[in-house]
Length: 522
Picture 1 (cartoon, one colour):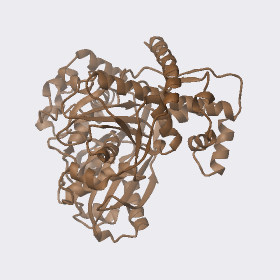
Picture 2 (picture 1 turned 180 degrees about the vertical axis):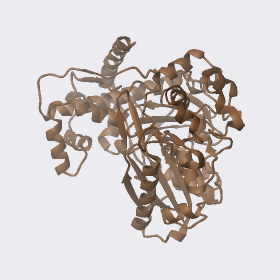
Picture 3 (picture 1 turned 135 degrees about the vertical axis):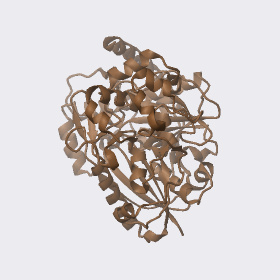
């Protein structure tokens, strides 16, 4: 029996899982990673810290699985779409102290993104018409304008996923997923657009065949270099030469691990619910949806098109909003004593009670970090209506549930916008830690009117990365084969007809509040 290792680097941790050839998880491990937050929505990390965490997580997962490391046939990586700065030879190039990563959720480049959007270059047609400060070219423009010495000294600018595969294999090839979704690479034409970089003020990046951002772009799962280098193999505790597959963005790995269970990846919208939320919709032909990123060619399922939406803060929005409540400190202590997260503890308190009754009069637009889709407005902020003088647990529970409902209504807007452009879906295939609780899945089903499919595995994102290892070593011939052979549907949560009607009324209030907030921040 051969085994596969999937590695997922999220915003707060690095995780690794060992899977067998059928996609059954044998063991996993997690290692925290450091994150620094500053004024102006600045968020930074260290590539040394992340690589160290990855190595510890892989060793821990192999140990937990009990498998012989020599049985590992392939390894795959996914990560957040964060920007890594490397000096000549690959040493970290810090922005300050040891921090050489501008994290995906860093919005320091909001003004640069607005200027790029004002230029209206045709490249923007393939990011939903509006580029986001979460993407890499606005961040690079910010660096050039505000830290020119660092910008000029950079040997490579890399997406975090591509950094990890380079660190493992020594191969500088970029994944078509990362550069298409976050760097404006035109995968359907197999090229960078030099005119775009010239127009926005980054013409130097087109020199030497775009060497600093990726001269060679390959499909996800492509075997890189000669497999694990001796140094990487020693750090990871795996055999030298183990095949390494070109990676995916973390949400896209979750999509790969979930959308194949229906047999037709176009039926399911992949919804990754974690710190942020990401939606991935697969289509046979390109769908241009205003305010929804894409269409991207071969960014998740090779040969097919992808639209990507979601919200910049989802689990993070829940944490941010409920922590403002006066009962939150007491609730945190009670949740910790029960061995639970605060959101999980609150979800358990609902029991069999009706959610719309518990949230009666409380409405939340949870856009604490702007609206990623379908309004593509990073300036929007959260709105809470209906809180009274109650300082106890029931009031906190109502705030929590109303925030979940607000996230569901935002998802409903994305589904509707895509359907209007011809990208319709039948179901929601969920992954991510925040979506594991049955209550959360029921709220999403009721607020959107779509069945929510949970995968059989508890780790669909890791499974998606393990599939990349299977492609790299030849255990699976293509992504379709990997999805059919390694992923399976678990519980399906169906919407409740009576709840849908009650949520329709709340959705009307949500859109009214959202519109008012948009005018207030315009």
